[in-house]
Length: 153
Image (tube, rainbow, N blue to C red; front, side, top):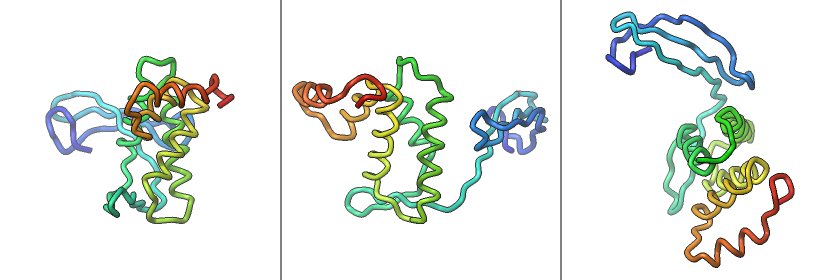
């Protein structure tokens, strides 16, 4: 594994353990060159998934991009990183086991909306404002009027 600090090709694994949800292996590593420590995650990928964007453009599924979107929606909310990781892992697992190799981006957006609705109502509204392209305060008001507290929407 290449060191993210100095770029050296070799590192030693100091500790390995499964993540809380058991869907990945967390490895604590140390660079043989500079001695820096860093963490990597090893996950199972069942199949290569292509996301079909608008205008039929395609790009490979990127777990990090999905995780960043959800993290941004949950920013400054009482949602821990482990709960975000569980949601991302759940969505990824659903995509990989769906049997489809090409998935419309709208389907992923709806899966994120469903997950955030149960996780945090404010994060749900934040994500919806970008996903559904709210243009005016009235759009927020109308959407928020239909959202109840977490687990009731």
